[in-house]
Image (tube, rainbow, N blue to C red):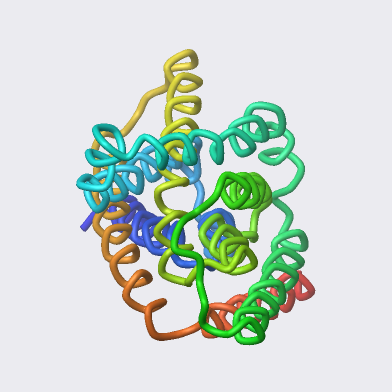
Length: 261
């Protein structure tokens, strides 16, 4: 197998898994090439867009029945998702270049992994202190609160799913319901980012390797589908703690490598 194709597949798998598990896809996509000194086309905006296209496809396939129901019958949920998407949409339009150019430091990722990991643990303790009486319906306030949390996920190391599920727990949603709403809410955000970045690429065309883009796209879509299914089932029984411990361990490794440089 061509080495570049192998890199594309690995990065696609990493994108698909980490986009939906609460451990930060942005952090992993920045760190993997940094750790292994991978350069070239797999470390470009074009390739990143292909990976996000793959995870968008996995969301659309997994929740296609939900989206059909939302558009045809559940107008309330359509309204809640639309409102919840506004904060992330505004943040993306206003801050995307700043985040891409100034917030991709390993030290910022270390801070985000630890700080928001601690916040996830606090949310779990909050759930235990409140007992097991969860909301049956998501309110407009819940949607806005979770939507603002999703906007914060622009910062590398935060994790879109991690911060939005955490926000859902603070709003007294069950883990499963918080994760499901998180994934539905992330769909238009990822779609918007995909369209925005794709338009930038079309305006500045380069020589693209179709094989690399396809390999990354397919592997991201497949691993993303698996990650969604796994997390929804996992959160029916277990808390977020194991992902928090992974975040802490990753932060320690990043810091150790950075200090040795």
